[in-house]
Length: 68
Image (cartoon, rainbow, N blue to C red; front, side, top):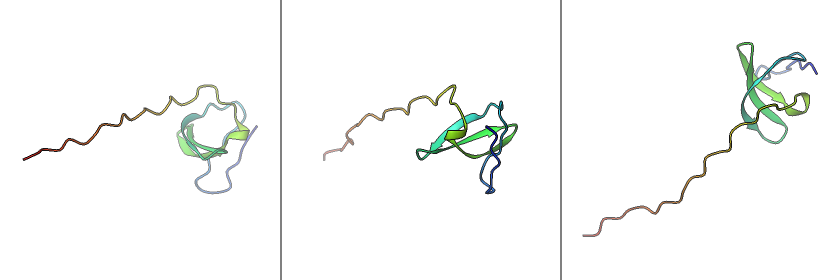
């Protein structure tokens, strides 16, 4: 579907455009870039072809403490 952004931070696009997914913004919106323009867009207007890589898991490393 075509989407015409109503706010300055919303990304407008046409059916068939390929949007480069940058990040998810909540459950219903994402941030991306198409044709050199960036912004947020509703996920229900697009089909995610290539998802973002999983977030790296941070290992819990205890802080090192120097004893006298």
